[in-house]
Image 1 (cartoon, rainbow, N blue to C red):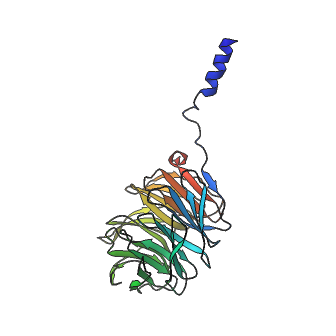
Image 2: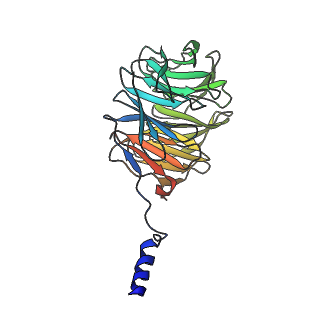
Length: 316
């Protein structure tokens, strides 16, 4: 009897086999409509999501627990981003307005009319002093992040501008959209600096990997890597079977989200597909990765936000 009791105890505390499946992703379903955008806070502790239900939600990025609901949008919440110090979160709205909340209190800190139509793209400068916006009115602009006063305007796009981002030095802005052209311009003056061409579909999201490397993704089903100084494409990431809506980058790995219901991970240096993230049942609008690269998040047409640990990624 003693032997049987000891054996039962040992079996109870034995660890799972090394090849056991990892636990499933954390799934959060509090949004009542599709989710367009995701962003991790700089310290990786919070995840923000922006939705067609007009709210921005903050989540505990470790547990998936729901935090503050940031309200005030009068139309779809299209894009969300944290300030570099993590103290504020900003949202681009389909009502043409940018709203900024204080993370600690959930209070609205700033609201300003940025475009005559949808604000489709939004990004903080690396020092947090400025916000860049992209609009469906064919205009991109730079604003004082504390006051909402316009600092520069870029008017060279010939169609809706979907995305905007700052280069690492904060002096250059990249924007792109329905006209398929990626434009780099001076953040202080709005003047054109360079154009990157090659996408065969509209460009949905841009992200700088470093000072000289820009990532883009498009309705042409590809994501691409660009050498900014040379103005040339250096790598093309192919494999998605529908439009690629979001591209994110961390530590030499590129993350993409597509209308083909998948999010994927790629090696930026070789263009090889490394992994897939747990699939959604509908198109995936957004993917984000934490600064330490240990956690990713996806969301899209199915209202669902997923938090994914590194161990849950399916390797190729």
